[in-house]
Image 1: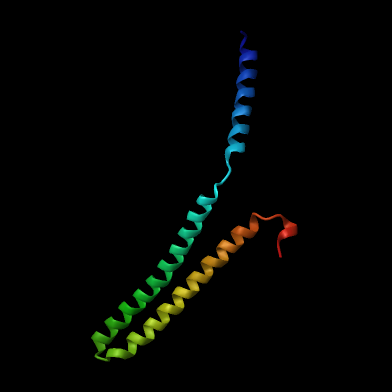
Image 2 (image 1 turned 90 degrees about the vertical axis):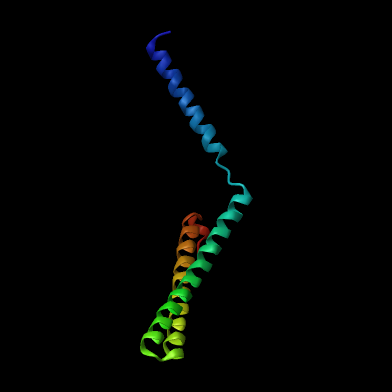
Length: 108
């Protein structure tokens, strides 16, 4: 067998393998479920970390300054607002990613 026919056969085989791989990339619905669960946990962690950081800063300032509930309440509120803002940013990012995969006529 000559080198030319071998190269041609290898190229044809590579093309068939790539086509078969492309056909097999079908996402199972359970993978999508886990993907959405990961996003949900990410958002929960963002909110709780904002609250926790606000609590820690507020409590620390109240201990240092001797004004027990004032800074605690203020910084918990600020931490909650920051956590919600980060959650909204994540939701907007996911929406952009989702919309990018749609055909142009389906987008709003």
